[in-house]
Length: 332
Ligand SMILES: Nc1ncnc2c1ncn2[C@@H]1O[C@H](COP(=O)(O)OP(=O)(O)OP(=O)(O)O)[C@@H](O)[C@H]1O
Ligand SMILES: Cc1ncc(C[n+]2csc(CCOP(=O)(O)O)c2C)c(N)n1
Ligand SMILES: [Mg+2]
Ligand SMILES: [Mg+2]
Ligand SMILES: [Mg+2]
Image (tube, rainbow, N blue to C red; front, side, top):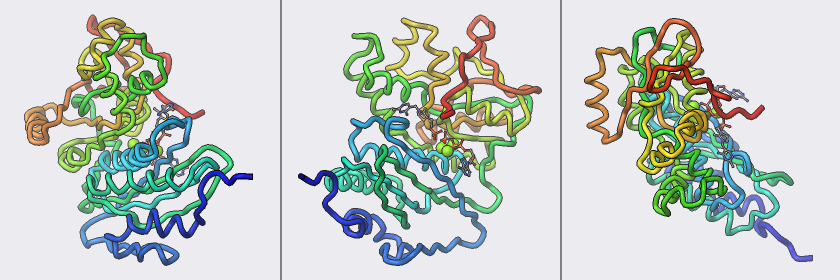
């Protein structure tokens, strides 16, 4: 019988693929100890977050290993961004499926190395197991904020403006493109590649999150869908949100699709995989938000208003309320 999958042992994988990713982090102890050590500078707080990626649920079985690894890191960095934190390190748990051979594992590690360099972060430790089920990867990201300055979901008050960074719906459309669900010829090859790139590689808005400390009254990142996530923000803040669908920023690749099918907008704001920041700020800070947008060379768009009440209500250009079939992604 030929052996499939990894021919290396658990500790060979840790030594060869993962220890090099921890070398810049003295507290990782070269992944030779039972746990890592981390100092927290006085006057700062640690910010801790964990998100998992499961094959067939969060990524496609056919996705390249380096892209899966980078999406795993980036979705977690997006949660640090949402809290206004600067990345400090991460822990990684990998459950390899039987078909993961040494090359697959090494390409996964190579993807992490690439993004470690991009985001100035390194590995602190983790766990390596095999599973008879789908590949499952879990990452715990650690970040730092000056004590008491973390952005929270709970500070929005009536009268404030709701903003979103970047563009919404690209990741959802990228998944549609990758799974052959866009009408034939609906997007150019370049646009399809852009949208698929947005699905594979979120852009955690770390600089924006940190810049919004002491500016935004509430903030979160958009993972489940803009409507669902604004719903989380509105619930914790104890307010309502009016979302104006014609103001939702769309990319040049997405716009032709919504022009051909205006009803698609309702799916873009509920599709998820955006990893943009949504936040609220008092109306008199509009100039400051514009300045931050120019400073960071990142579009920031006003998409709604905070109102008294509860829940998110969507309105179209004519002022008519749009009712969503579902607000966003849920696992249950
Ligand atoms: N199994 C769990 N155990 C403990 N806390 C959890 C668990 N699942 C979620 N949480 C916590 O619940 C809160 C909301 O989690 P959720 O995963 O919805 O947030 P998110 O990461 O921003 O969204 P997404 O997972 O869509 O990226 C977070 O504070 C998270 O730490
Ligand atoms: C193959 C495939 N099918 C569907 C989706 C859509 N999706 C899955 S989980 C999720 C929300 C964030 O996850 P979580 O809340 O678990 O962190 C979204 C938008 C995808 N990304 N890949
Ligand atoms: Mg989560
Ligand atoms: Mg989040
Ligand atoms: Mg998350």
